[in-house]
Image (cartoon, helix red, strand yellow):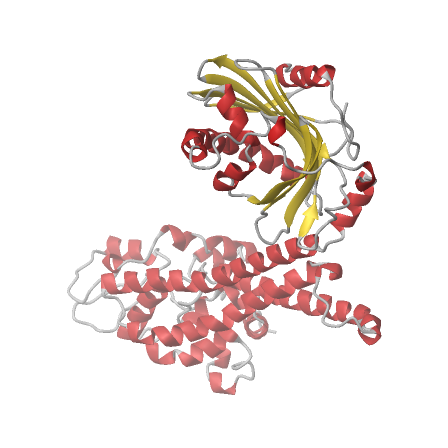
Length: 545
């Protein structure tokens, strides 16, 4: 049987062996069976790349037509979109030649090329037809800089006629594309592309007769050896072929670097996109809700809110880029200089990248936690979770945070906010007072100050009401945003949390002069250093310490 690198002179036994491999299912794993096309694979010791076998039933296409289409290199350029270049180098026998073939590869991969010896056998009209090829090393076609030299261990075609205008087509191949592409990826892609190749080949067959009629209709050297015009091969032009050496050489082309860098760029791009989209989407929903319910006319402040959200976007992006840089091995990074000095500082630069990467990743992780937490409004007016009640039997941090999920089930709505003219019964008043998100009711008609049984605010910041004196005001993003947005009646985290809830709460608090601000209900208080200090001070105060 043929071996890579050797000029092969096949006999009938070799073709029969190839046919037996095509028609025997033993040892093959079927992975696709649909629309008269079957794809199967098996493994062997030659290569980690699977042997791929495709069986397709062609109707309306004779075996002779399909045989011509596969052989005709000039016609192939019209239908094979992956083909870059193809030509014969020399002839070995009347039914064998050596040729060059190059194909396109999707970015960022390099193109591939092959130098193969091809052998064919036509048993006559309405009979079986064979084409086999494998890689050899012809000295007139050394590896090119813009291509990676692949290896064909065996690629073959078997055409069995099943009628005057129908046939069964077998395509079997085991090839190594070279470079540093993982075998599992190539195996997976091959299974997907094989059925598409059969459809493309069938479509090309329908156009061949019309094309051939205009392009040397009688020129078919694969049928008429006397039409061959290429030179005979010379044994001294066939070089030695070491599979391992060829694959090692092609693996050092830097393709893996480009592959890693490309996916790294895609990941960073996705993270940047998500960072920009998240606040925009939340703002859009928030302002739509606000406008729909006529809750709070703050559309004019959209630019300010976006600017505030930009602070967190910077954190997200810094974390994304820093983390990807940190986990990317240094050998995949582009080197700015190859000087000795650069080599000496390589280790220190690597350490700096890791440190910076993980610091920014930690910042981003904190920002993400912040992003999640502030969407859960902790209302401290639950009886079992009053922060100001030190002797509460269920007073614990877990209770406070678990109660934060309760308001999510009760979305704020103007329908549950009483108006001045609404007369409520005592039972209705008590019922509404139990709602965490709106526990304010009118007890006397005509009053513009609302009474409330339980304090809406837990006065978390009561010991530091004058925010201008707080040294954290310009370091803590919470306080900074709060100061910027005081004129809206209450701080609103619209850039990071659904703005409708806070706009509604702000409108109520401003209209009816309810004391406190959103800082009182901020669930980030246990994560924010300044708030934690205030909280500890308050607890010590209530404990009488």
